[in-house]
Image 1 (tube, rainbow, N blue to C red):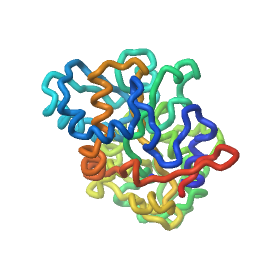
Image 2 (cartoon, rainbow, N blue to C red; image 1 turned 90 degrees about the horizontal axis):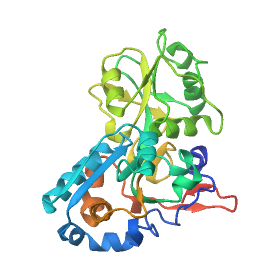
Image 3 (cartoon, rainbow, N blue to C red; image 1 turned 45 degrees about the vertical axis):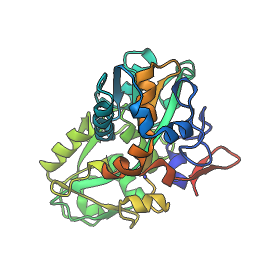
Image 4 (cartoon, helix red, strand yellow; image 1 turned 180 degrees about the vertical axis):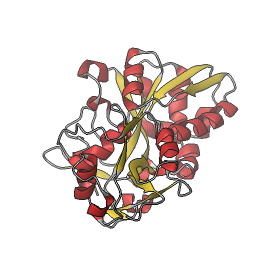
Length: 312
């Protein structure tokens, strides 16, 4: 949920780049920085605010946002927080257009929007999550290399026997274009190569992948760790490394994403206060891990002279 992962995910020279420690130096909507927001903690939620907060975007961490929203609204009964998870691209487009107050994304806005749109937005990095391949319960393969994943998701490898499994046609369940999860996975597997292969189906949301994987034999797809469900499918190793949060933070598992919440620079008080709450100890110290994510403070990154970002 790192050295190669960031560069593969095109985190090169992005405007508003990362600080030396993820989560530090972030500018909050309206000018309050993340450290101030975290210091406010519960006090932010206790402030008297009212209004409507709306969001759209990545389905990968919608459950985390919903859980935080419930706690926030309990403390702020005059604020309504609601939204959908229609993919990172749609969320970023919506917040840039002003049709929602927050756009949730697995990728930096710079990868989806024009520069003049990005300059009017403020990024809040609220969590980190690992992502990895999942296979149907009947599939016997439990470990794939990046090269094998590349072959499968490009359509070059079509039978499980080619990667040590049974003689059965591989069913590839992909995510639709615009999905941040897809962008993260493909960047880790393919690097800068263009990928045209759609697979046997392109699904809208992480929940759709969960459902389809649970009812399809011989299938493979990919999900963020928070959507893993071993009652429906198996999460498998990549390059011999298990898909676990601990292996993301120590730089051994390479497929992961930072979860971003973008708002306009002139966002309303309700939106600003909710985003402060997302960065507060109330959320970061407990709720993030409860929902299967990694607190941003656990992930340290550095940039080299070329602008490439890696874990340290």
